[in-house]
Image 1 (cartoon, helix red, strand yellow):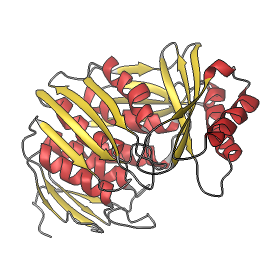
Image 2 (cartoon, rainbow, N blue to C red; image 1 turned 90 degrees about the horizontal axis):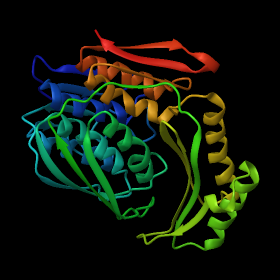
Image 3 (cartoon, rainbow, N blue to C red; image 1 turned 180 degrees about the horizontal axis):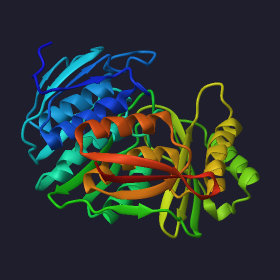
Image 4 (tube, rainbow, N blue to C red; image 1 turned 120 degrees about the horizontal axis):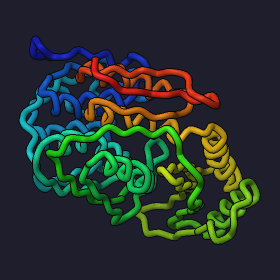
Length: 345
């Protein structure tokens, strides 16, 4: 492939070696106007190269940014992306499988927030995929934080799409042009509300009931905090969501039903993750920490307190720094937590 001489060359096998490298590169390329040449794309994955959700993210970025692209094909392990001007409008993006559409949103949201104008977006595919944040995480945890930073963005779920059938749909409205403001979040405050939701489709309700009963036994939550929710979906599926609203923000953890995995095992898995978060005193969980890097970098500053950082987050820090003149400073904080601060480089 022929890449522009000024293209940023990125080795997709570095660090975590997954799709976040691609999504961050696409978003920041559109914002900065800098082309990139990505090689060894998703090299650390069982199925390397572009899967459907990654290809949809590439084509979504190409659409909103009038970009020129080479290598946009299923299985491709090399991509050259030359951005054009970001254009607002009405867009529809379909993965064509159960691949995560919440991750496609997280590709195009940044350039659309950066450029003046309003866009109405429609996403079809997997809304509840074990390898990505479920829609409720986006709507209840992530977007409220962006609105605190001054972003104008809303999202609504029309239809749940479980893995492997997909068929889900949600819409979003993004109005850009206002600069993001720094966010400083170090204390979560007292618990305001707790909720366990067992979402299921085309499966017996007893599965959801067993999950909730296990949550109640493990956490001691009240029956009023437990909900079994039957939804319509193209195929069978089940997700157990544990959300906690604090005075200064919310967190949500999820686990998904699988064949040969009992309802009690699903519950134990997500309860363990929530327990680690509650025991850490950190307001920001490991998945949210990764997703806060781009908005804080675009704001030019900000900080938060989180758990020990994942390789996913550390890799994302490296990619953000390749496009934007910022640096991430990670230091020890009280109670075994880590403080992440963004500052100009």
